[in-house]
Image (tube, rainbow, N blue to C red; front, side):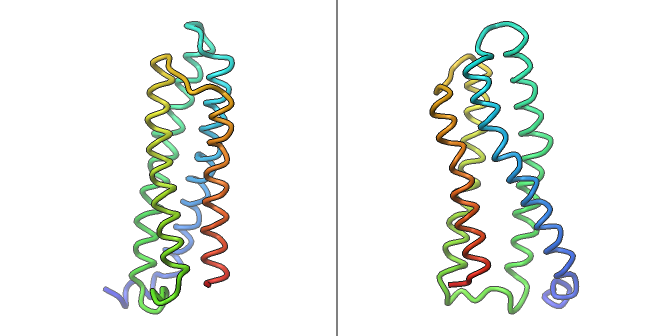
Length: 148
C-alpha cells in the first residue's frame, strides 16, 4: 500500500491542492454571502430566498465535496512514507489548524440554517468571522512551507 501511495504521490498532491483551493474559495465566500444576507436579505422577499439558495448550493455542491476530497487526499499524503516527520512541530500545528478549519466549515453550515430560518448574528459578526479562514490558511501554509 505504501509503495502505491509513493507511486501516485504527485497525483494525490495535485488533487489535494485543487481540493484545498476549492474549499478555501467557499470558506472565503460563504461568510461574505452571510453578510449580504444579514444586511440586505432578511426580509421574506426574493433577496432572502436568493441568498438561501446560493448559500445552500455553495455549501452542498462545492464546499462539502471539496472538504471531503481535501481530507482523503491529505490523509493519503500523511501516510505516504517519508513525507511527514511527526518529530517537528509543523505537522501538529497544521493538523490543529485543519481541524479548526473543519470546525469552522461545520459552524458555517449551522449558521446557514439559522439564516434560512430568519435568525442572524448580524453583518458585523459575519465580517469578523470572514477572517477566520484567512488566519488558519496562513498558519497552514507557513507550517507546510517553513516546516518548523
